Amino acid sequence: MTISTISAADFTQLLTSSEILPILDIRSELEYENMRLGCPVIHTPMHNVTPDIERNMEQPLFILCKMGPRAKQIALCLAENGHENLVVIDGGILGCRASSAPIIEQDPPADDDDIADAVQQSVRQFMMRPSLTMS
Image (cartoon, rainbow, N blue to C red):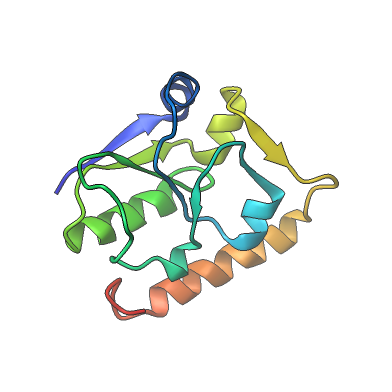
Protein backbone atom coordinates (compact mmCIF):
# COMPACT_ATOMS: atom_id res chain seq x y z
CA MET A 1 0.00 0.00 0.00
CA THR A 2 1.62 3.26 -1.08
CA ILE A 3 -0.02 6.30 0.41
CA SER A 4 2.00 9.41 1.12
CA THR A 5 1.23 13.00 1.97
CA ILE A 6 2.41 16.28 0.55
CA SER A 7 1.93 19.64 2.21
CA ALA A 8 -0.32 22.08 0.40
CA ALA A 9 2.69 24.42 0.06
CA ASP A 10 4.84 21.72 -1.58
CA PHE A 11 1.91 20.67 -3.78
CA THR A 12 1.44 24.29 -4.89
CA GLN A 13 5.11 24.47 -5.86
CA LEU A 14 4.80 21.21 -7.77
CA LEU A 15 1.63 22.44 -9.44
CA THR A 16 3.30 25.60 -10.72
CA SER A 17 6.40 23.74 -11.95
CA SER A 18 4.65 20.76 -13.62
CA GLU A 19 2.53 20.41 -16.69
CA ILE A 20 -0.61 18.52 -15.71
CA LEU A 21 -0.89 16.55 -12.48
CA PRO A 22 -3.56 13.90 -11.94
CA ILE A 23 -5.68 15.40 -9.16
CA LEU A 24 -8.82 13.82 -7.68
CA ASP A 25 -10.98 16.42 -5.92
CA ILE A 26 -13.40 14.51 -3.69
CA ARG A 27 -15.26 17.46 -2.18
CA SER A 28 -19.01 17.89 -2.56
CA GLU A 29 -20.42 19.59 -5.64
CA LEU A 30 -21.20 22.74 -3.65
CA GLU A 31 -17.68 22.89 -2.19
CA TYR A 32 -16.21 22.45 -5.67
CA GLU A 33 -18.41 25.16 -7.20
CA ASN A 34 -17.55 27.50 -4.33
CA MET A 35 -13.75 27.14 -4.58
CA ARG A 36 -11.61 25.01 -6.86
CA LEU A 37 -8.12 24.74 -8.25
CA GLY A 38 -7.56 26.73 -11.41
CA CYS A 39 -6.25 23.67 -13.28
CA PRO A 40 -7.75 20.45 -14.62
CA VAL A 41 -8.92 18.02 -11.95
CA ILE A 42 -11.08 14.93 -11.76
CA HIS A 43 -14.00 16.05 -9.60
CA THR A 44 -15.79 13.12 -8.03
CA PRO A 45 -17.54 13.67 -4.68
CA MET A 46 -16.31 11.12 -2.14
CA HIS A 47 -19.61 9.22 -2.10
CA ASN A 48 -19.25 8.60 -5.86
CA VAL A 49 -15.63 7.42 -5.86
CA THR A 50 -15.22 3.85 -7.12
CA PRO A 51 -12.09 1.73 -7.42
CA ASP A 52 -12.36 1.66 -11.21
CA ILE A 53 -10.97 5.19 -11.57
CA GLU A 54 -9.03 5.22 -14.81
CA ARG A 55 -5.48 6.33 -14.12
CA ASN A 56 -1.87 5.57 -14.81
CA MET A 57 -0.69 3.65 -11.74
CA GLU A 58 2.88 4.75 -12.52
CA GLN A 59 1.96 8.38 -11.82
CA PRO A 60 0.97 9.66 -8.41
CA LEU A 61 -2.70 10.47 -7.93
CA PHE A 62 -3.06 13.58 -5.77
CA ILE A 63 -6.23 13.48 -3.65
CA LEU A 64 -7.78 16.76 -2.51
CA CYS A 65 -10.48 17.66 -0.01
CA LYS A 66 -11.00 20.73 2.18
CA MET A 67 -8.19 20.03 4.67
CA GLY A 68 -6.98 16.43 4.24
CA PRO A 69 -8.93 13.91 6.38
CA ARG A 70 -11.51 12.93 3.74
CA ALA A 71 -8.74 12.61 1.15
CA LYS A 72 -6.88 10.24 3.48
CA GLN A 73 -10.01 8.16 3.94
CA ILE A 74 -10.47 7.83 0.17
CA ALA A 75 -6.77 7.05 -0.30
CA LEU A 76 -7.06 4.19 2.21
CA CYS A 77 -10.10 2.78 0.43
CA LEU A 78 -8.46 3.04 -2.99
CA ALA A 79 -5.29 1.39 -1.65
CA GLU A 80 -7.36 -1.47 -0.23
CA ASN A 81 -8.70 -1.95 -3.76
CA GLY A 82 -5.29 -2.20 -5.41
CA HIS A 83 -4.41 1.41 -6.17
CA GLU A 84 -0.85 2.52 -5.54
CA ASN A 85 1.07 5.78 -5.64
CA LEU A 86 -1.63 7.79 -3.85
CA VAL A 87 -0.76 11.21 -2.42
CA VAL A 88 -2.98 13.05 0.08
CA ILE A 89 -2.70 16.84 -0.08
CA ASP A 90 -2.30 17.79 3.59
CA GLY A 91 -4.08 21.07 4.21
CA GLY A 92 -6.43 20.53 1.28
CA ILE A 93 -7.88 23.31 -0.82
CA LEU A 94 -7.62 25.75 2.09
CA GLY A 95 -3.89 25.10 2.38
CA CYS A 96 -3.52 25.44 -1.37
CA ARG A 97 -5.25 28.82 -1.28
CA ALA A 98 -3.03 29.94 1.61
CA SER A 99 0.00 28.83 -0.45
CA SER A 100 -1.10 30.96 -3.43
CA ALA A 101 -2.15 28.08 -5.68
CA PRO A 102 -4.30 29.13 -8.64
CA ILE A 103 -7.83 29.15 -7.20
CA ILE A 104 -11.21 29.98 -8.73
CA GLU A 105 -13.71 31.23 -6.16
CA GLN A 106 -17.44 31.77 -6.54
CA ASP A 107 -18.64 35.33 -6.09
CA PRO A 108 -20.62 35.64 -3.89
CA PRO A 109 -19.41 32.63 -1.90
CA ALA A 110 -21.80 29.88 -0.89
CA ASP A 111 -23.26 29.97 2.60
CA ASP A 112 -21.08 28.16 5.17
CA ASP A 113 -24.07 26.27 6.58
CA ASP A 114 -25.05 25.05 3.11
CA ILE A 115 -21.49 23.86 2.52
CA ALA A 116 -21.42 22.07 5.89
CA ASP A 117 -24.72 20.34 5.04
CA ALA A 118 -23.36 19.25 1.64
CA VAL A 119 -20.22 17.84 3.26
CA GLN A 120 -22.21 15.95 5.88
CA GLN A 121 -24.51 14.51 3.24
CA SER A 122 -21.59 13.32 1.09
CA VAL A 123 -19.79 11.76 4.07
CA ARG A 124 -23.00 10.11 5.25
CA GLN A 125 -23.64 8.62 1.79
CA PHE A 126 -20.04 7.39 1.64
CA MET A 127 -20.24 5.79 5.09
CA MET A 128 -23.51 4.03 4.27
CA ARG A 129 -21.90 2.15 1.39
CA PRO A 130 -20.83 -1.36 2.41
CA SER A 131 -17.45 -0.83 0.74
CA LEU A 132 -15.69 1.23 -1.90
CA THR A 133 -16.27 -1.60 -4.34
CA MET A 134 -19.98 -0.77 -4.34
CA SER A 135 -21.21 1.63 -7.03
